[in-house]
Image 1: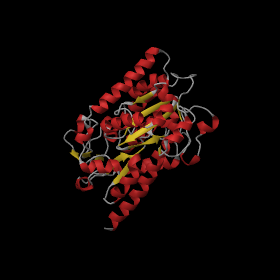
Image 2: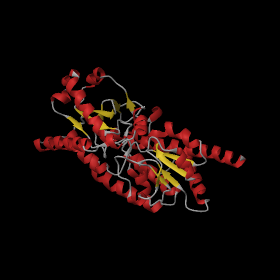
Image 3: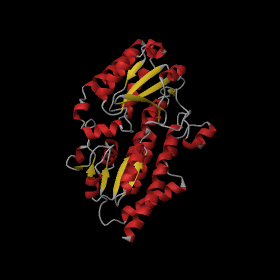
Length: 378
């Protein structure tokens, strides 16, 4: 009993350090384009010197505490008598595990996202926001992996069972790859992690100059929830994509991912572009946004509305967590943020219409049970 108690305590410390560093790795990602603010007000070397950070520096584990935490976790996995029993509680973490060629004993269920075929016969433990801890505990996991955006809700539940856990920084593409690097080391999948890092490096080196020298559009990002919406800052995944594309978030400069702001304050920001994304139940949210913009007169005074630059984003590309669809997401954003011709403007409209249609056809509301709906809307 004493060993179990001690194991839980040491596990909590180890994982808290690891997760804290994983969260910090977002800062390196946010500073790439400049203009992003660091959590806690600290600045990276790249920000203080005004230089762009290289992909290699973004992904390299140089912090002594971070390195120690990764090494300790790696040793713990290596000390197991068999392959680690891992549960992935979100589609994004499941996809990362699939690409790392990790077997799972438990995986989330999802009414919208398609899970990797590798896990078709794996026990489901409930949705990302509301995993069934009774099922999870019965699987006797060594590790549970979840996105950091859900840490405050899920960490107490994980601490109640005898397991290690890690919350991955999926608030940006760069953060995702940094997390992949660390998971690769911990679980002995360095080669697979390196292949993915090389994939991102090749993409980034090609993409980073695409919008160089262009005037940065001012962007307002609305993240729709069932019955309401919030503002996505540059610290959110959608916000990080806009920043990666060179856009200027009109609510930059906070350490929060999301803000609750009234429309009068939004009007003072006068965005060039308004982007509308959905967190769960995209069919409901697209209907809510359409009604909101049609019935609330203040929207008609926004320049973005007058100029027809209000766009819906594809749910599968612009969710709460980073995923491997980021090249498609950035391609979708390009004509919305930088319409250089009538063809670009038409393509932006078409992208938005396609996203809205996909949301309407998702039938997400019909597929979502009442218990999950409570978690989404609480």
